[in-house]
Length: 503
Image (cartoon, rainbow, N blue to C red; front, side):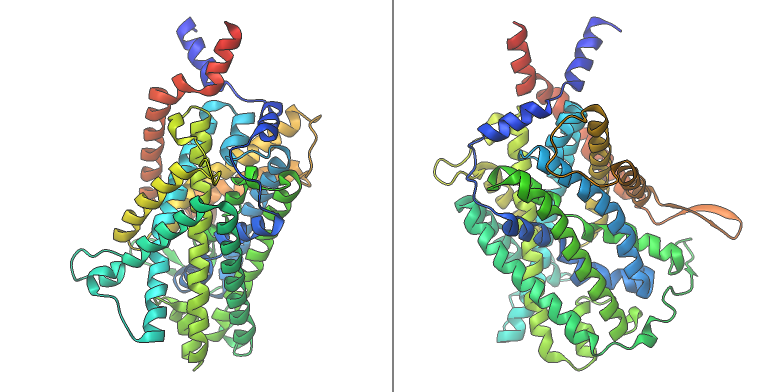
């Protein structure tokens, strides 16, 4: 290997030690430490529960899994839980903003950390833009239900399709308002988010409790509907459908990673972050199981492929009075997703810039409010414009591959660090790590590429993500490599500090 190649390799694999990151956490004064365990948990629940309850669960029941959508959530939840426990161990050990990016920096080195950070930055920003559009749809429905007034077609966004290019005004307002809340003061935004998440949880509980009285258990039979093979070779229902749905509803099983990006704003991060990660996922999965069973027990699963499936299920049973509660809960639920992922995107951007992998201009907190105001402001404007023109479609496939890739790296990283540094103090230790971490890797990999399946004497992969998703992911990564090798590798703060030390 030539000296030039050796130098490049050393730059790529350079990493921060856990002790360095812990020291940075103790010295960090960029943000105001204002959030406790319940506010952090609310951010996690806010990010997890939203589109999954109000859109994905009923739609995937109708299109792929039937009543067995519960099994799809269980499969996706197993992989997500393994990653969640890995996140919890890292969060208690390395309480620094940046989440998976920071953890990767400590174990895998600078280039893998950049890949994780770049991937999550794009994914989070995209989620903010498209979910804001989904919030607008429910807001328009709620406004029309209360006042009977409808926005002009030109401002309805996706609801105005077929009438030429239109702008989604409410989606843009949602994105800008949440960005303003996060710039003004994180604790005020967090308190607002806690209230919104509480309303969402209350709404979902009402849906489960009231709906339970109208469940017909006969609608759960057969629990896994018979296989239907379409002309294009795709499979619907059966175990193939359950697995296919698992790859999609996985989108509804993550989001707790956003709360770990707020480590430097937590009052007691080493204690509170692990608890918040675990609590948020447990609460969310309980809600998904409950809603899935209730909806498929109230109406036949084939009737759930409609624009507002939860509301439609109750209207089908003559419960029109509850549709308003559902709309409010849906607005709160999806708006809280926007809050959580915008918070996560801004802090990952800040961490990348503070480490020199992106221009340092972005790594300046507000002089008065101690918030990452520059990344937040840019995200607010860009996502407002994007949300104004992009309808809520293909969201799950668009973001799942990046998150699953990050989960694979996190599960591997926590396992490697446990082997490499067993001496480190861990406030939270993932139980049965040597089993759970490999399970998390395997489940995440299968959710990306599909599950091996033998049927009718032939081997095939069922579920998984489609070719367009792979292409999109590769393009994102290529852009990231260009930025890293064109800018980040030469401006890395870690690289500069080591050069000064050597000099």
